[in-house]
Length: 319
Ligand code: ATP
Image (cartoon, rainbow, N blue to C red):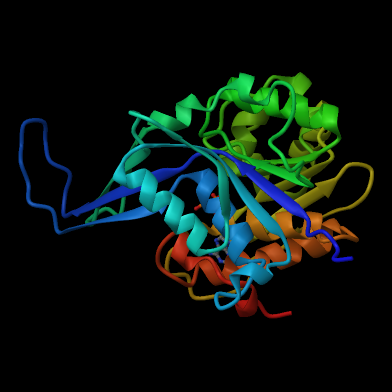
C-alpha cells in the first residue's frame, strides 16, 4: 500500500502585484512617466504555498513532491484570478480549495518603487481575500485534514482566530506568520504550534523595543513572552543576522545567516516558512535542524531577483 504524503494546507491571501518603477513619486495632481511596469503573482498565502510546493519537488517532476501542498482562499472571477490559479498549479499546488467568487475582484497589491530612494509604497486592495470568512471553518478544517496549517494575516483576523480554534480542536498543528502584524488575543497563542516572526512583528506583538532583539538576552526574553502565552516553538527571523529559535522547555539558539551576495531579499521570509513547514511534516522533527535547512533555503532566495520565481526547487538545495 502506498504511504500517504503529508499534507500542508496554506490558508491565506492571493494577490496580484502590480509594480510600477519611477524615478520619483509624483506630487498630488502631477502626472509622471514611469520607467517600467510589471505584474507578478503574490500575496503572503500564495507565496508560502509556492514555497512549500517548490521546496518539496523538482521542476521536471511536479507530481513527485514529498508533500501534498494545498491552497485555501479566494480570488475573483477576473483575469487576475485565472492567472493566480494557473501560476499555483504550474508549481504543483493543489488549488481545489480556492474559491472563485463570481462578480468579485482578485486582491491586488499596487506597489510604487521609487528608484532614487529604493523605497516601496504599497497599497493593498484585499477584494476577494476578505470573503474568506470564519463560518467557512467553524465546524472543521478543509478536507483532507492537513498535517500542518500555514497562515498569515492577510485574510480577516476573525477568520484566522476561528481556524486556530478549529485546528486546536482537531489536534492539527498550525504555523502562523503574523504578517502584517496586528495584536492577537493572548488566549489564541496555545493554538499556534510554530510562530514565525520577523523583528518588527516580534516587537509589535510583545510590546518590546526592536533594539531588544539585538542581544541574546533580549531574544530569549521575547521568545519567553510568546512561550508564556502558550506557543511551543518560536522563530524570530533576523534578516542578514539569521534566525533565533526557541522551543519551550527544550532548546534555543541563534543560527547565523549564510554569507552570500544579496541581490533581492523579497520572499526570503516566505522561503524560510516553506522549508521549515516541510521539516515539520517530514517526520523526526528537530527544531535546530529545521531552522538550519530553512536558513539555507532562504539564503538561495536572497541571491535572486523577484518573489515567487526566486524561491528554489528541491533539487537546488544542497544537503
Ligand atoms: P520578507 O517579508 O522579505 O519575506 P521577512 O522580514 O519576513 O522577509 P527576514 O528576517 O528579512 O524575513 O529574512 C528571513 C530569512 O531569510 C532570514 O532569517 C535568513 O535566513 C534569510 N536572509 C534574509 N536576509 C539575508 C541575508 N542578507 N543574507 C543571508 N540570508 C538572509
